[in-house]
Amino acid sequence: MSIPKAFIFDLDGTLVDALPDIQANANRALKQCGYDFQMTLAETQPHVGGGAQKLASNVLDKPMDDPATMKLYHAFADIYEKHPADFGKPFPGVMDLLNALRERGIPMSVVTAKPAKARVKVLDAMGLTPYLTLALSPEDGFAKKPAPDMLIECCRAMDIDPADTVMVGDTRFDVEAGFAAHCHSVAFAEHGYQDVPEEYADRVVSLTDFRDLLKLLDE
Image (cartoon, rainbow, N blue to C red; front, side, top):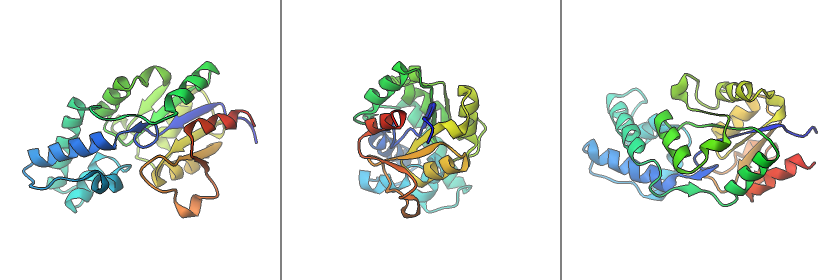
């Protein structure tokens, strides 16, 4: 197999442990919208990965376009912009890996379901922005993962073919987007918020240590 020339990362659950911030901001939004319940970390975790609107829909058990869903979604997005990284931080090994890739001149990008304004704030707060050629959210005008659109646009910006690019994520959405884009490899971060989909277990590079991604460059 050829050696990859670029990497695309999911954000929450892959580069950054954002679950405490997602929980805190979701609870702030619920309170602001008049709901009398709050979510624990364990209750929040299954809703991470599909975007803020999907989270609001799941939490309220209402359709995606329901007015109550949209109200909670917008409240969550606005609050997240003000509290992007009160508790979260990069996962162990992430900064080591990013620094190693930058030293080798390997371009990197991020594709995330996080609202665009919150994405910018989180990447800046975590010190991740300088490493990236491009970072995209659906609000930038692209279909959500598992559609490959954001990945393909990142490859265009990095001037690297998807077949030479590794997609790294922690959800089914990430895995399916990587395969849909015909990426060189799809890697699954085991420190994330979901288990690797069983039907893809033998097709992904499973990462118990994030720095193991470097092995793809040495094969």
